[in-house]
Image 1 (cartoon, rainbow, N blue to C red):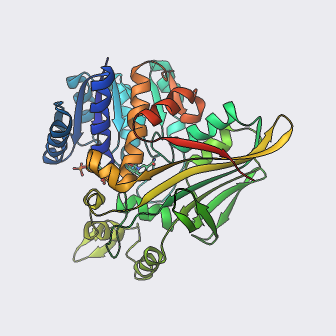
Image 2: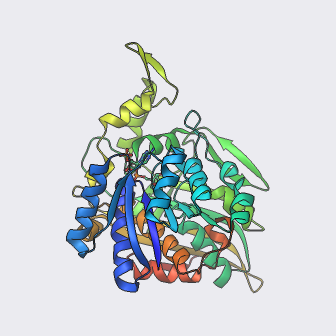
Length: 400
Ligand code: NDP
């Protein structure tokens, strides 16, 4: 039985709290769960919601995760074995430092980003490998849906369906509608940084850069979702997958956006409101995208409003027994079913469930190995089994 500290109790953190409570009740895997962020009242609200739905009482604490000393003291005080980081990517390195300092395993759902550049790279976190190995601690990077489940899907396909993979396309469709003129379905600042960054894909051993959202395609999604336009963007799991999946000739990431979302983003960009560099305003520095984020709806508030489904998966083309083969492995998730179960929309849900599963596999010792790891470096089977069990059933089909 493990003692878990969840840092960050926003849209995703609230789902992690609910799902960890469910896991604790079903399997006794977590002995104690503590929710912490800078705003104690939000932690208490989330703990109350979990108690109302499951009857389980979670502990709460206030912490600024950018203060390594403060966080390592909290890790020691609550006796945490595992820290689940669902705060923002800016905190990743500080939280890893605190885990090393206090002797706890680490898990997150998004790679570190320096605040002043929208860079999505694992190099800063991979550089911790020796320190985690020497301390006998595990760090699991990117245990959300994408990155996360998409990495495990890739590993499972390589274990069970293909001998070689040549082309990987990860396709992320959110066919949900919240009825707001413009809102993001996870942290607005992080979302806008990702979408407005230059695109990048892997082709014949090198990265090819594109203008933001310069390429698009139509894809016909299953389960009644139908045809949607998807745009090529860079996504962090491409870096670890091209490193760990040998033989890949091309790897791309696609995401659906409505014309309405893109039109708003274009106008906001044109007037400078998506900028990430500070500007001087009334005698103080403000970061435009942070100001914009403060005006936009809190993604956690979209739960009761969002209708429709998400469909995220991998199309993988390669060979099996010497013959060409292509498979599509995916999950479909319904926004309203997620809301009925845990009070959140499907984007937070599809991120929070895999974060819980990563923590559970670490707590059970199934995914525990000193060092810093991406999900495709572990045996995918126990994770895939838990996905179905905890609300994210998946399908793998052969396609022409
Ligand atoms: P929210 O903005 O809703 O929540 C962020 C939480 O982090 C808040 O509780 C905030 O509380 C807390 N936080 C921020 N700064 C600190 C700090 N210095 N110390 C302690 N707590 C802090 O974000 P989301 O829940 O939408 O996203 C959470 C993470 O999940 C992000 O990293 C995002 O990139 C990732 N994500 C990953 C996905 C995947 O599939 N892999 C998909 C979607 C999101 P407070 O301000 O009170 O401290």
